[in-house]
Length: 242
Image (cartoon, rainbow, N blue to C red; front, side, top):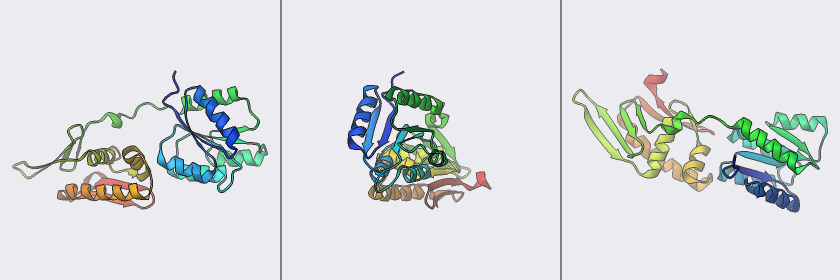
């Protein structure tokens, strides 16, 4: 199986070792982003989506354990491997408490690391989410045709309709809201999937689009897009959660 589609975030403060390890993984068809400390590692993680993270533990500015904790606050599922010269039992236990999937002491055999990466990726591979394939959605008094980007509101016995042709980003955002209907849609997922970046400016842009969607959906009082502080938003259909 080709590894070309797998993206790895490697955070290692030893530039030479990091370059060698990145080249080795790229030789085996992985796409690798290298960051040289924990602060840069978190910035890289915010800007893209990764299939696996490899973190050195002892790093300046932000150590690997702290970085893993902050990554876990954003993503509970991405696999994390720690690389470290520290082999004390307490450090290993601390690594697993931070949500590590594996812990490899330096020096290590490159081929062994490769097999461990393959095993973790195979274990973490999931069946496709059928919600990702859904193309039409009905909620409250609305119907949303995602491929055509048409949102339709129907009300009254006569079946009066209002229709809007959404912009591409409005349609992408509403599809994500529908996927997470009555559940929390993580802000970071919307930003990385739709805006391809998670920073202050893209977050403000997303807020503008959320406001636009609220305006479209305001005709049905049972529907609300709620802010979930520190996490994201919820598209609530109150009749469904009452």
